[in-house]
Image (tube, rainbow, N blue to C red; front, side, top):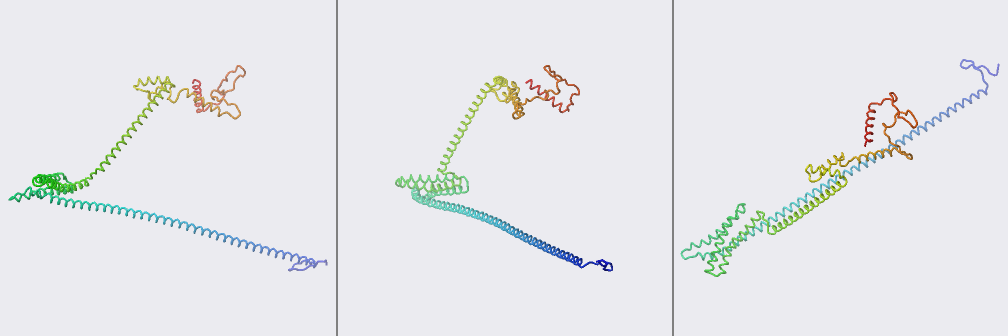
Length: 424
């Protein structure tokens, strides 16, 4: 047999191998197994590293998410605190405004109450003074009556006719009753002059009796003193009622009337000065307007003599004493054919200036100006002949394509405008 022998493996015939081949195969198998084990360890390590990386990524992401959440919570907390502070500031401001309004209202109420109390105190003081003045006037009236009655009673006394002593009392009572009636009329707002007239008649009667009888029976001092008492009592009471009348009717005092007259004179003087100033300004404006009109007429006569002469004729024909703006506009239109701000020379100059501007705009830097020509006046067909005796090209049917209707209309309009420009 050969070096190899036949072995049966699993019922199949297999060639026999040597020990070297077996060891080689076993080494290869071991290498493959080691390779498999190394590969498995690498995969395990790779998977571990990958898992560790994923875990680290998850942890980092969770940390970042937690940090973001923390920052978001802090921002939310800060925003809440800020909004809370804003609301608290608004509430505090509203409270301050409310307190200020309440304080202002309280101060206004206090001021109103103080003013009302002051008015009440003033009215009370006036009422007290008025009552004191009224009572004093009444007492003075009684004192004067007591002083004046003895002389009157002596005048009416006759033995056996004692009843005549009632007459002087009657005269004094007439004045008293009339003054009481006057006071009632003043209080009720009724006419009071007739009551006061009756009271003064009674007082003057009593004073006359005192003077006449006092001079006959006594001395002049007694006569005039008792007469003065007869007048002073009713007079003082009437003076009290006169003050009530003035207060009721709002009558001004002498000082107030003087101040009112002074203010009226000052206002009248200021009004007169203002009227004089306005008249002077009006006169100055009129003179300035006349000067401007004269200067304008002079300039128009100097610069537009033909139009001015025609305007004078038109003004005379239409019944105007001066050349008005309407007359001047009509005269300018009759002579120049345009409104006053236009003329043939101005229109021509404007058109020439426009053409010069157009030519300047068509000029390129470093080149000569290009002459702006009219498209309708340029040769559209090549000349039929060259040389000194050139003839213009002759248009024949079919030489060029026909224009559209819009182009023909525009060409006709341009041609008419060119003819007008040449004629002008």
